[in-house]
Length: 181
Image (cartoon, rainbow, N blue to C red):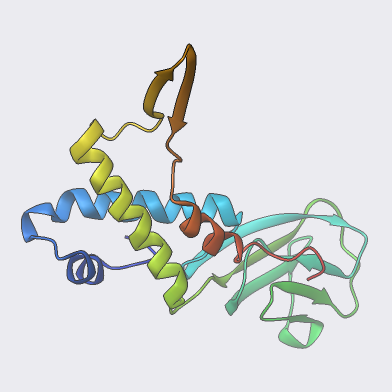
């Protein structure tokens, strides 16, 4: 599906799965990919976007993701710009040469953003999430929450399960846009 960060075939091979698990695993791939994009707060898998941006009177604007693969159309106040009137850095920075757009939804942008080839570490993180979710489905019906409780000498100890494995979360956090870009 659009936005999936790893293929069924790769997950099947790495986790040694059977074809009868395909529907469940494809759902888990989409779910884990969505979780990763929420954590990273940006589009990760290459996809076409069509957005409007409020103009603040500046020359530079941050697109919602990167890398920028292709620019289809850029308008300021409904005037389509020519490529010599702007530049777009691969890191997702849109810069106008002779415009300082102002106003609500002053900028229209259509383009393709995100990774065309998903980095291997990001694919591994998604596979780790899928593996954890498959284990969870077989042991607790897929629920996340209390993993175990024990009482010793009147003191109750509770272990909680995270929604995704910590190592996967740490990998995904490396894909959050740095504030200085």
